[in-house]
Amino acid sequence: MTAAEFLAALKAEGLTVVEVGDWRHHNRNHKGAWGPVNGVMIHHTVTSGTAATVRICRDGHADLPGPLCHGVIAKNGTVHLVGYGRANHAGLGDDDVLQAVIDERALPADNEANTDGNARFYGFECENLGDGRDPWPAAQIEAIERVAAAICRHHGWSERSVIGHLEWQPGKVDPRGFGMAWLRGLVRDRLKPSTTYTVRAGDTLSSIAAAKLGSAARWRDIATLNSLKNADEISVGQTLKLPKK
View 1 (cartoon, rainbow, N blue to C red):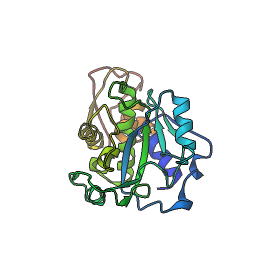
View 2: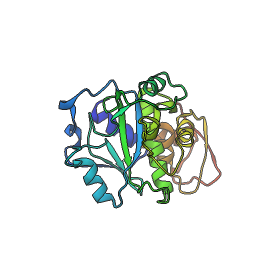
View 3: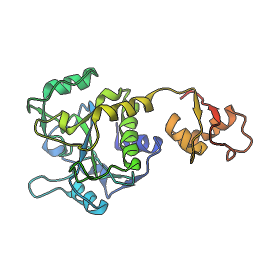
């Protein structure tokens, strides 16, 4: 997808997005291919502090120029876009894993590093020390889930197109602190078509529309379908009918 479609897909999934500089044209395309893209790869940063993390992921290091991903997912769930195109995030990985992602089947063990992952995956770095003790706030986990679902939804992929760096490249441990099978389960559930929705605390019609229909602007469709005269008058436990996507 284009950079504009990428941004729109993330926003339609209900994410808070910050655009960092000229992220749309910040890439490593002059060093190699970008695409065909087949999946989404999740990392942890081994850093703390959102501002410093975003700066590192955008600019990189002396021996590894940026961008180091396409987006940084902060502790509070905000997604900071730092690049679009080829990024130095995946490195060489296992061709059998790539084929499993393309086929959307269970992943084999990664035991080779023979395939360029920077050309084939969207990459998201998540702000975390990666020591197994640094917490993963609920807002951050939900943002990771939404990011992955947004991209899968756009491409028509299932949750099997979402992998961790540790599943791609031998010796990598990221993301550490949650299981990728568990995360894929969250993504799978988010991608399921829904016909009804039970209102939870903190919900609004806009947030429900963003999460379930892919666009906050479709709150009017929910209001119309449920004959709601006042869109603000929804209550916890109320069952709403959802229109088709």
